[in-house]
Length: 227
Image (cartoon, rainbow, N blue to C red):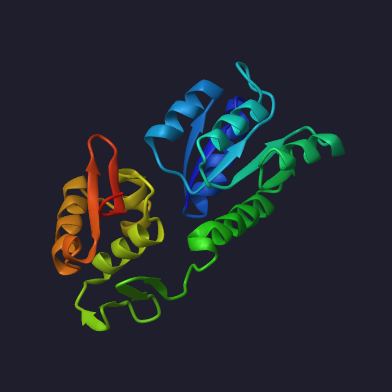
């Protein structure tokens, strides 16, 4: 899981990052709202964590900007504000959860994991993914095209699952590498390019109405032809 953290307290940010990394997650910290909004445009994250009071703008203003992008990524507020009206306002404006500082990091990790589970493919994480004419079964790593088994390596299958589960969404290279190869894997980005090229051929994407588009200096997006 990749987390974007908006937190201007360096010490608290460091503790939060340590807790996330110890649990095997990646985290990028931003100390200002404008930097957060720029950074989350150029990178892909599973969950966003917002503080309320930051130097240049409020966490609510950041949340509003995120939702104006029509991004479906889950947002959790992590703040010292604990008044009921604050919780209600954050949730009513599009936040998915609210946690008061100082948070117990075990609870924070559990809440973030729950948010990611709910957002993954509309709650279908771990289940068979059907995107006609393809069917991907994660229980045995089988991929089928029009009912016929397609021979994929484990990495090819995992990459296909991530792309098809996020069809239409631009995914950064960092996100794809961590999602498929893991947080600490020593993998060159060329490896990702090779696997994408292989998927295009093995799944015969263009002839079946799909394409993987490369976006320079960012990553890849799976999309329907004609979109």
